[in-house]
Length: 350
Image (cartoon, rainbow, N blue to C red):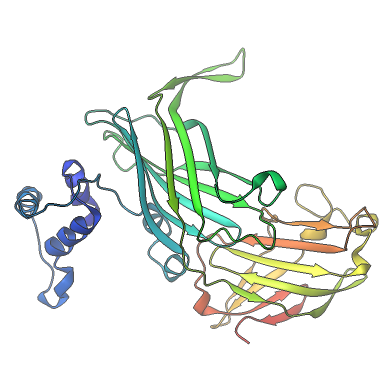
């Protein structure tokens, strides 16, 4: 019900603090002992108007933390998320970055587009003609950070309304001394459009733009840092090579493992091509995560962004392998017990 009446309030202008107070007032969340309260939709709007008579706060567009809904308000979400609510309005069209889920390498952003009242956004698939994301305080041109990503359109619960929601997934590969959490992030996106007719002669789609608006949204990230970081320095055998597991990181989003050793220099000469894409299988090693109740979660799918190696062919480089795996959902770090990498057990709460 909460989502339904939030949609009713789309055109009522109030601050996030006042909206939260209104939600609590209407749902009785501050006093759950009073039991459930049943509110008619018509009465809801009337109650909202009465509530607003006493408000003097700055007006704001109503929105929701999209990732909290997409991933569920789970422990994993709470351990890695921050509500943002940063927005920009151009030509009557508003873009809102609602919330972020992040770790040292991967970030998800919830993005909502709110068109002028009366606009119907009912096409099957929308896209942004242009977009980019950057951290203004980080010097990109010295190779301190690089990355990529893309948008996924989320399910549209009401195709007849004037709203669209997206998930933006981004992967960053900063240098070891660069921390993105706490930095200012700037997202630029625009020229929202949709596909119309597929042309067989060109094997391409015709497109139509719903707005030429280009939005620039800048905010500061400050998501919780609950990542488990270990330096186990445990011996491991990869095929016939003796190496060392030097670094392990586990967040609600990713598992990262680094294996190092001089024996890994030139490993492309003897490492079989067992990766899903037919490449060398150096970063396609077996990883299994075990929870406290004994559940085994196999992480042997295709390596995630950030996987790779050093010294595979160039013997002057250090011999190392970086393995990244991404969870299908957000992991509850309080429930994890240990990790197995190539048969070596690593306690996660030593």
